[in-house]
Length: 543
Ligand code: DON
Image 1 (cartoon, rainbow, N blue to C red):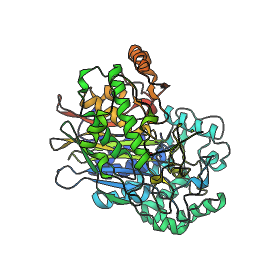
Image 2 (cartoon, helix red, strand yellow):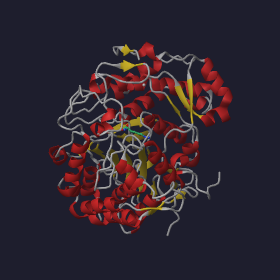
Image 3 (cartoon, rainbow, N blue to C red):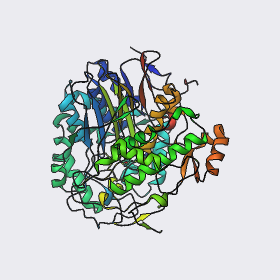
Image 4 (cartoon, protein in one colour):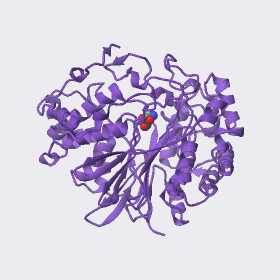
């Protein structure tokens, strides 16, 4: 077998599966080895993550999948399986703290989304793609350091969720490397999905258990909401950047529009003029991010419900924004609020990238919103529900300097999809997918994707370096630049200068988790790398 194990040295081959979980990667790779294509592998990997990475892999959440056929003639598509607000939700349903409650659950989209992707592109029988996950849940997954850390943290924090404690708890003590996590009820649920397709989730026993769970905890989702849920095939947004084509999801993700808007602004500058970690470059990226995130707050929401201005992704508009950047001084976020009135007063997802030998490329980000979602496990069905309703703007009209957004476009309405930042991305050059990337991290997702993309395209870093390199983030409000701690360690002078330019800084341990695939032009080969920020650095990895 080809040595494609993400987590060893970078995989060099044209069949690559990179996700946060080695067990899920293995299932994806075996699917390719059995003759499945990249979409089959994405479906199998998606279900495997629901077992192997419960903090974000899911059947009770949602996501976006960008698919680019290898021939370059069939159109690329986005499968939108974002959750929806239940029919009885209203804009004044104020989803307040706690973030973890039955009220915050959106109608899940993942099973419908994976099924739709399979219906359009799959080669292998559906059942054969779900069964490896059934087996993994039934026989148990061997716990590694990342999973042990994730489970132990959830068990510590979610003491008031007895079903979560029962399903993910260990009889005695905390989870250790080498333990086995067995999930028999999840195995039964996955078995129903394997046999019946989406009907095994949205109807029958699974649906009954989910609705019962809602009744028990005061949630809104009904049988009707579940039966009415549909994933949607959408056209990706297409941007261009220095001769590369960018394929990204449209609304209800904000990621595509924001990424294209930022790249369009950056095309007006020569990024190679200054080193990657100079104050000049960090300042420019900050200013570009600030402007795009301001527009995100002002205009973006589910385009089935609100009109989104078309100019946001045009080169002319970006040029005007680029001209408004002062290259020596920070712009105040307040100064660009425009019509948004500011009021006074506040991680978990997973991305995977897949390429098959034909060149078919799949970029998927999926989430429960917070780590372990709402913390609500459907009793008797063994799976976690999302708390995605918290991605809607919580208080109509209340936009704050601390980052809460209250604009019209993303207010709750029945059947509406909440705005996402998920940015699964495929970059194309000379007829082939050259970059498949994306990340978790809430609003930081779009900027993590931007960081990786610029690192390979403008700064010509090898993929391992591009993914490892310190990341940064600015989201308009709060008005501060978030930098990974390593930036201080390695580029202290640039950081000091950035502060002197008028930026407030925030040091964070890590930003995002971008499992990526890149075509290394110099070597004429694809390489795939796992991001070690969440998966943990394997023992055999050497710099
Ligand atoms: O859709 C979104 O943008 C968010 N629900 C994603 C949340 C997230 O990435 C948390 N993870 N680290």
